[in-house]
Length: 366
Image 1 (tube, one colour):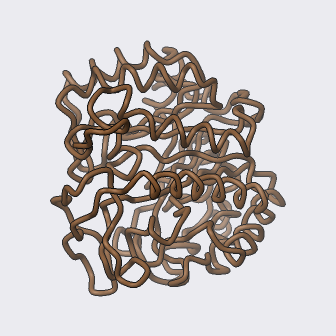
Image 2 (cartoon, helix red, strand yellow; image 1 turned 45 degrees about the vertical axis):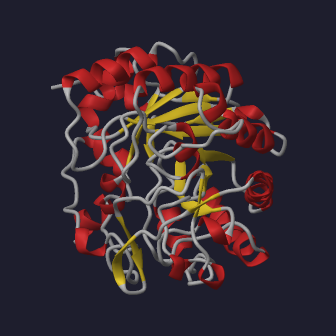
């Protein structure tokens, strides 16, 4: 049996002290109001999981044009700030720490989800061969338009405003979502970026938008309170690149040079097997990054402890296990059985499958 005690050792991430290395991954739950304001039940949901070394919120759009799925939350309006402030207060009251994940979906959207039925924004007018979740259920993504330079300037301002709103809402820091085939990832990878201006072509040009977002967010937050999420294997949302290792070798170096609080990497996407060759790529990429590293994807308590002991990661983020187990760190500590996951309640719905999963002490009391 693997000794998992290292999971419960404190660690410093940027300027934030974490009591353990079992982090809660961002988890889209589709339970916000249609205008993007989090519902009151989210206060309970996040506070229940405050024993995580750190909570990363569900992806939260920085602009109405960044919405890609029904009932996802925003951080671009005063009502959003007020609702999120209640959530951060609830988490902090339980002794927790919470970062907001800043999000723009880019082309992974549908006209019906966007203001006045507009077309999605993307680096290039390349439709995604995937579906998104609308009021009508799962529908094909709408064809996007290529953003103009004026729109790019406006997008940078959207990220600045989102970062400031997150600060006003009492978060401990922010994570820039640059993974899973969403907007920033679309600028990075040449399957989706076919521009011939200063934002396309060379790797340096394709990284320009990412650099600008980092710079503007770090104009609001100290760098040691800003993290970034990447998914270099391109396993989601019809994303891809002709030379992923070459591209992400440079991206990892940029992130390392920026001296951010951490790099959060999706090493395996749920339902997709990562090959040995891909794992070799991940190991080589890891050597390009000198900083706090959060691993994500396919980990359990034993494998997470080994990844930390081996020096591959400093902490590990867990997703589905945290949905079903609000006290996941304690369950790992005791080697206790995990609650069964009700996948039918993952996306959308009410408190069922959201705030009603039992804690260990409640099970024992019964």
